[in-house]
Each structure stands twice: as structure tokens, then as C-alpha cells.
Amino acid sequence: MSTSTVKICVVGPQEGGKTLLCKLLAEQLPADRGYHPTKGLRIQEVERTGPGGIAVNVQLRDCSGDFEAYSQCFPAMALDMDGLIVVYDPDEEGKEPELERWHEAFSTVGDARLDPSQCLVLGIHRGRGGEGAPPKFPISGKLTKLPNAVVEVSGDDVVGSARRVGVEVDRCVQHAVTRKREAEENRLLG
Image 1 (cartoon, rainbow, N blue to C red):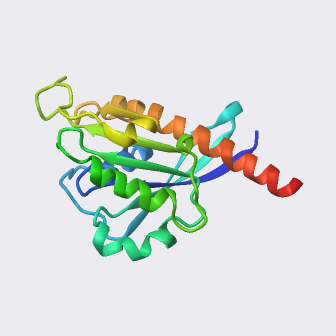
Image 2: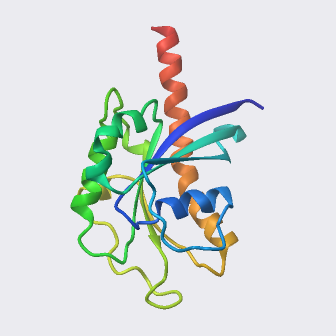
């Protein structure tokens, strides 16, 4: 069985759940789950299963939510990017313009021109309205044209939360692997 590697940037507003998503996938949740903002970039590697059952090494690039402070670094953060996950808190109203700005900044940086299938808009719903309460503000606007989902994350059910996040992220990984393979085939033929 061959192994493929894909690089996926995880971006979005501060406190949206980007680092939580990465740590859930890596099964590395710390005992202290307080908010610790990412400074610049954190890279988390996880293994997932790709198309045809191939093993995929996924490099998750957890980018700081401080757009203004790090926007000059976006080209370096997005270097050789194969996919993009825009993370947000669906309990916060009016985030669409900010999410669109994040998507635009990364999906078109440098030579990157990501296909919508290589992107995912993911709401990390922490159930603050009570256990099982639905998110207040699901995604709307331009970003509804991209694959999107809201995932319930519970502090008591880390394994279930990781599984739910993984299902959504795996779709992005599958498309990233496929598009990367197609680009490599076209490069070799052309």
C-alpha cells in the first residue's frame, strides 16, 4: 500500500476551534483545555485513510487566528498547500464576512488555486447552549457553495468528537489527494 502526503491549512477567526480540531485528529488533547492562542503556525501530523485505502500523511497547518498580525506570512504558511479548512464557532453570529476573507486569503495565495472540493468550512459546535443544543448560526452566504458541516464536540466524549471531526476532514483529505495526484499526472504528461 502506497503512502501519500497532503498539506492542509486550518484557518479562521480566533477561538474558532482550529487547534481543537487538530488536537482531536491527533488524539492529543491536553488536560488543560483553556484557550491558548496559536502564535504564527503550529504543524500537526496525523495519518488518515485516502482514496483506495491508501495511507495518507496529513500535515495540518494550524494558522493563527490573528489575521492582521500574520497576513504577511500567509504565502509561506500556504506553500505547497493541498487543501484548506476554514474553522468557525457556529454559536457566534455574523462571522461570514470574516470567514470569506480567510477563504479568499488562502485559497488564492501565490500559485494556489484550490478547487472548492479541496476546501471545507467546518463549524466546531461546543454545545454551550446545553447538551445537544443545535448551533445558533449555521453558515450562510457565499461559503455555502463550498463543502461545509457543523460538528458537535463534547469535552466528555473525546473519542466520539474525534470521530465526528475525522469524518468531515477525511472528505477534504480525499479530494486533496485526488487533485494532487491529477496535477502530478498532468505535470508528467505535459
